[in-house]
Image (cartoon, rainbow, N blue to C red; front, top):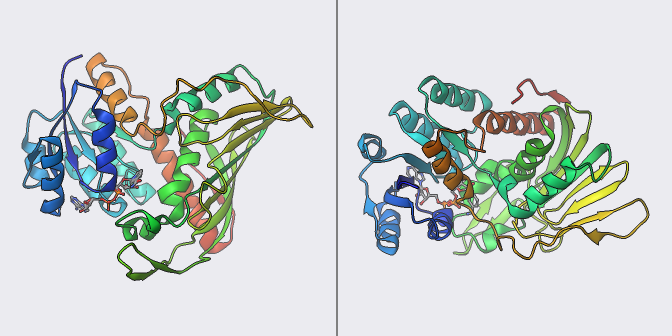
Amino acid sequence: MKKTNIAIIGCGNISVQYAQTLKPYSFMNIKGVYDIDRSRAEEFANAHGTYVYDSIDDIVKDPDIDIAVNLTIPRVHGEINRRLIEGGKNVYTEKPIAMTYEEAKDIVGLAAEKGLKLCSSPITFLGDTQMEAARLLNENITGKLRLVAAQMHNGMFEKWHPNPSSLYDVGVLYDVGIYPVTFVTYLLGPAIKVRAFGKVLMPERTDLQGRAFRIQKPDHLYAEIELASGILFTLSASFLVDYMKRPASVEFVGDNGVLYLGSSLFFRSPLRFAEQFKPYEDVADTSGAYDGIEWCRGLVDMARALESGTSPKANPYHALHVIEILEAIEKSLNEGIEVSITSTF
Ligand SMILES: NC(=O)c1ccc[n+]([C@@H]2O[C@H](COP(=O)([O-])OP(=O)(O)OC[C@H]3O[C@@H](n4cnc5c(N)ncnc54)[C@H](O)[C@@H]3O)[C@@H](O)[C@H]2O)c1
């Protein structure tokens, strides 16, 4: 495989995970990095032996860059993704593509018009156990599926994350609820309507430096999402309860029984099946699965797709549909109404 040159924009917490997980892929070359806080870019460049760009425009002007990788805070994703695409770059972006459906739709349209590839995380549907779950569902292990229950409880992450405010700013839904919404719709297709309820349960928070901050968006929520197939998808997400207490599990409930996936996030997770009133039994040997989350898997898949002229597995129209679902959940939370979804993928 020929070398793929990437430039990373945003050298915060997750950039370290991307750099670590990219290491085994010798064809993936981090040619340079940029961060609005130059000291972070320099720290990353020193640790990984790469170059510091002075601006995003310098990345756009660098003809060697095959993929620009946007790992900045969610509120600036839209503006940066647009700039990169306008400048002719293929883009891999952390979630979401933009903070509103309309803005994301424009950006996806622009990429299509220019013949550029745009991929967005989450890509946890590419996880080993997650793909095994997909295979078992395709084999119809559950019989006719009626209900999917997913939970994404990420806890008080200010207890470990050095910069929690930008993620609290977008809220539990856009930060972590997006994982099961992406995973379940990837497996089972588009949604048609939602109804949601949530609250700020713990408004006063304290970061690792002992600074107090106040959160505005619900830190605990429930959403009922109806899929076009008629399946009911029920979601809970929390910045209060953590995943050691309530795993980020997904239960697929069908006429023959329930397929239980221990986590929609971690690539090596329990995968069990049980018929009605029977106990769960393991249905897959996951010992060879990747231990953790291989954050770069979608980016590597994109690089391979660019080389072979195929479509990356992370489809921008799917990512866009997910943003419409999140927006609909927020509207339902704020207005107490059922909200219809118009897009599909
Ligand atoms: N931290 C995690 O565990 C994690 C996991 C999965 C996904 N993500 C996603 O990754 C993204 C980044 O999260 P993070 O935790 O690394 O945040 P972070 O705050 O630690 O890092 C973000 C970086 O972006 C930089 N930045 C902000 N605005 C910029 C701009 N206009 N131009 C250039 N750089 C800019 C900041 O200076 C900072 O270094 C988010 O979309 C988040 O949802 C994070």
